Length: 434
Image 1 (cartoon, rainbow, N blue to C red):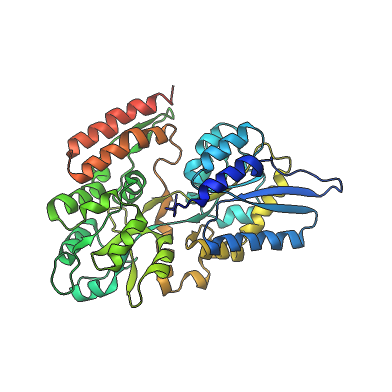
Image 2 (image 1 turned 90 degrees about the vertical axis):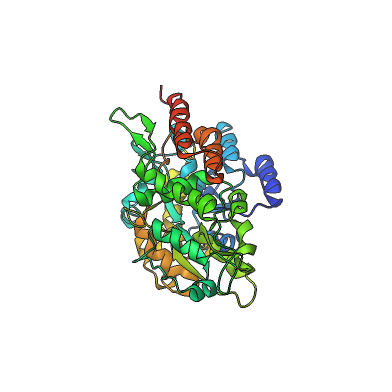
């Protein structure tokens, strides 16, 4: 899921949702009018405005099915939804992310949408995106926004260095990226203090998702349906590159390992870092926060044996199993995700739409602010490796996060990292597969 700016307002939002916002899904009033509740997690002003405007447009043209907009928060959505599901008070239409759906889908809280979705929508969204919301035999959400990880770079430093500028068609390999980071590091004219800063406060998703470019999978499902962990050669390329940049080349800032993405932006603006790998939506913060005259560009993440493939967990729209008006809820979702509306939602969130028609819109193909680079990367986006793995949250928190943090800092070697991820990890997953 996308990195978010945390604010004190999240706590207020959560309290409001728990006290008043979770009064259950919609129903039918005395006049026979269907009333639906749509809980949105939009948080940027542009995105909130786009969502509210679309709800307004729907209500104006569908007098028999009226939708109430409810503001949710990414900070607390899992626990808030669990509470509302268990109390039979869930909203009808639910905005979430695909990597948060597994427990709700397997728990019977979300409606299987296979017989409800219109053919237009199922055909417009590629199969690899639908796989992110498929659990068992059912489809429990509509993936609609996605975010590749890209390199946001200081253009002046790149130009002064004379390094080859990569494109989506000809990206850097991981080896070339390592060499470029070394060339950009220094204290002379046209050099940054560090060639790259890796913000790895939350290291697991970026490691898994970028690992796909070199064929990394980590999680392997057998014929019996059981998942086991292996740390193969393809899994080692991306994390090995980072470790070498930090500890051998000194081309990556050690202090950035404990940072979130937003924390690295002042260093990027100030010339301390030449490049920062960030989610595509961070471009908005660059536009809003960069000092006057700062020149920047969007570059593709490094490529491996599988090209620019990387994992994503799209934002999703689901329908509560307890909703009495599932067909009407899906009609509203179909309206929200018409190509022209999906473009509006993508622009509001500075992300990419999953729909092929929306992705082809010229507004998302412009060179300005890196839109064209992101759109070109869309074909390589795949479901995040742990998308449907039960027990993944525990493995991530108790095993993978501390192990990767220690590995990247140089505290443990590759052999110890593999032991923790695999041996300790498989013991965790085994408890969920009995």
